[in-house]
Amino acid sequence: DEAHIYIQPPEGMTKHHLEIKIEPRHLKVGIKGNPPFLNEDFFSLVDTSESFWMIEDGELHLQLQKAHKGETWAAALKGHGQLDMFSEQEVNKKLMLERFQEEHP
Image (tube, rainbow, N blue to C red):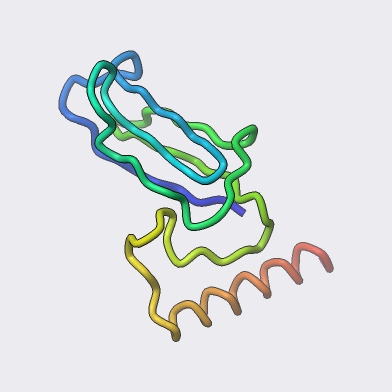
């Protein structure tokens, strides 16, 4: 139901330096006053009201709520780290099992 993105920010960077915009189909991450260093489309739709970001243990953590529950994403962002067909089938099987167990405890 979620996708997570972890980014190692430059040393000494705090939340006050960052400019992050999570849109239903697009993500922008940058340092205020500069062009975004990450300006990419999501693999699919994101529920922006349930998505958020935080700095955790010195790492930028974006938690994205998928708009379509149980949907398999090949990657969080389009064109990044595509799964091969076998791996995608295995992920789909796992998701279907988790969903079945959730609906039929």
